[in-house]
Length: 433
Image (cartoon, helix red, strand yellow):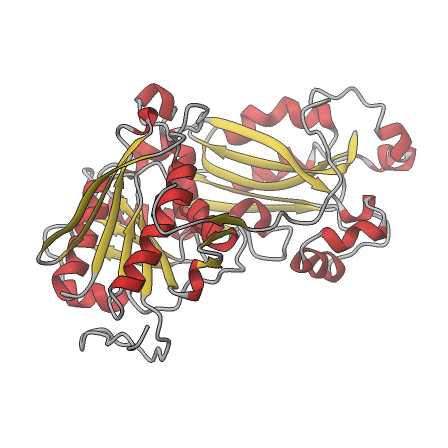
């Protein structure tokens, strides 16, 4: 590029970077998300908005629309070899961003994601996929990941037990995600959250939603926008050229293992919202934990984290609850169970976090769970979970005995030996192959 982007006078920035700035907008309710996008376009005539319509993705067709404040710049149907959201990211979204950066130097970009796409998937594609042999960050500065939440529908979305397949909006043939899973992941990966509009139940309920979002993503910047009166200039200053995105920030399931906070312990209700953190060194007894799974999540909107079971002491077990459903799976080995020559294949931040919290008996193994809900009793929750830990007598029996415990989770968390990360995936050309 021959020229540096000139930020509009209303955008406060000290950025001397010559690359166009990219703001990524996500949100399950596109009306609210598009309203934010339109406000940004209204302030900056040079800004380009990129959207992809996945309505016909099952047939391998995606509609791409690029617009500015003055109208539509591009409107094309893209035919893909495989009909899925991840293919769309690799084969058209990233090449389109690169092409626009080359063809329109000095013009910043906003990428508005389809409602079922999670921002972490975009961040992973930006980190690992190449366009014309180079990462897109050679040409584009990824400035911020912004998630927009519609106050009128947010609580219903978080409580929903519907899945994307039943709603007819899944992103691929094998997409078995629930609506609530998508919403919480859009919230938790974002560096900026915008609560749009007002709750149907009034001002108190809107305030409660704000508190809930603070508890779900305490690491994010939180904004509230009244949908009836939008100050587009102020919103632009709040959302653009913020430098909030940190590419090394892990996804929510890896946060605790890498030493990042998983949540805040706020046991006193605020507008009825409680956030409780449970940490312990001892392992869970598998049967006792299994017996209380429904009980501990009964009043929860969200719970997440990782744990270790006495019967499977080598495995980091992931814990994710949203929309009435609990998912548990393997996050790999605890470092204490790996030969030292395999540690080099583990993320540096993970090794550092383990070293700082290493226990001479347990190693890096521990429990770290966060529970967020309405009108929850945190004392009773802690008592229930603590009752699932091994007793002194059980601890004294040792690991070989623990492995023989009756285990309702047996076979659920397969382990593979950590290997080097895969090399980046190359995308040839700036157009879909």
